[in-house]
Image 1 (tube, helix red, strand yellow):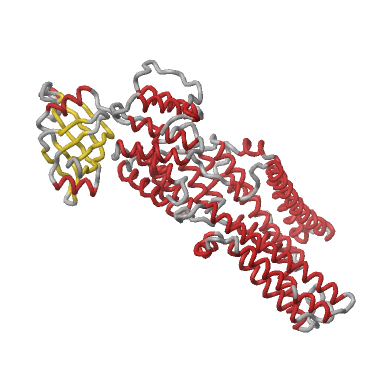
Image 2 (tube, one colour):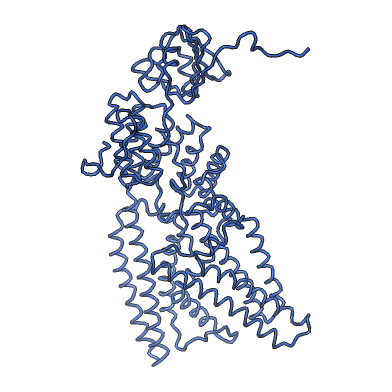
Length: 622
């Protein structure tokens, strides 16, 4: 189950000081994982499991580490198998539940099982940050941004510097969607199947819209050039048959029709693409049916017949729908989410490479917002012939300064700009365009010649055009090199980022020889738990047995079983019968084993001490 590739040692693994100690092999595996050496970690974990066949030294640790190594090697099925074995050995371990939940989320159709395991990990260890992070990740993958944000904030209350919680909380603020947003992770189907259906719908939409645009352009050329309106109309009437052929061909490739409505609802751009295609088909048919004998003017003219104006609108819808969709998508993606809050979260852990990448992309989104505001201002000043509209332009540099301050970019902006020089150019063009537009609006108040205002307006518009060219260059460069580009799809989640190992890789809590002796021989064991009436303590009498890995097995009353189902967190107190001053308290998770009729308690924390003597009593005042 945890063998390396081909059953051979996959890497040179340093031997521990005691090669026969499984826990030392596990420590070696954890060290290899922290150095990003999953093959060596897998080999060390295999050594640990082979040396502990009876699970006497916390074999679940070895299986958890093997599962994490399998996951990093992309062997998801084996990662799940190893994690399931860890849960079988220690069902009350929050770390084993967390590992199983993290492994299951990568397997298609097992999202719900993953969430169940993550919820159990939170229930078993609400004080740990990593189970909350996994719950947030699962919600974020489904687009449940509010629920994801709440889970990440819960994690940050436990560990403020958790890089995964910080970065992914920033993505929740941006309302991030994973690349395969059309697929619901909870669906019991392979995402590759829904991906094929999505590609078929995209190809259908693209082919139909291009065919309609080319056909209508040809029809208009024949009708308005030689004047062959009837012939052009007859030729254009044949095109819907070609559209039907394309539709039938692509529909044959969509094998998951029951999931198509959900895909369209989850992916708004896919839904828009399909909708605009249907609208374009209807507009094309109407345009062919109402084809005028003379070409309508390209600009609005009150003297034009209403029918000609309607035809021009239909033709524009068929010919320019692709451009409109692209512009609309760019603007909506730029204005979606709360980038300033996201930048603050990313900047808090800017030492991480993933955080710096997301900062870079978010700054491009901020630049897109600023550009759209300046474009509206410049367009109003130009087309309405009212330079006063440009008085709002100087507010953009002030807004950028506010983003810099509230986003906490001081310690990391220089490093981000050093790796993306075109972003530096884009951010420099925004203040230049703002100042030029502001000067154009202030010319009358300053008493300057009108030519200064005209040239300032042209300079501002030129700066905005240059920013578009810079963004296009950056996009083309990213596409050519296969690197992250200035678009939302380049935002990525944090998965096991940072030098910190996840909580599911930590060692289990063991019991010392003194604690084992106390539980083995004592006859005064007390079980503390919580029921609906409040905290309770129940005399158990004795521990049925102490497992090799430190698990306690208790024979308890039905009240304790019901309370453990309600809240599995319990504490077991014992006094050593041999050393009467020695006591131990084990806090852990109680799981009922109906076959053995015992409560299995997995230790989380172990406290030991001595009873205080009279001289150690509380000092009373006076």
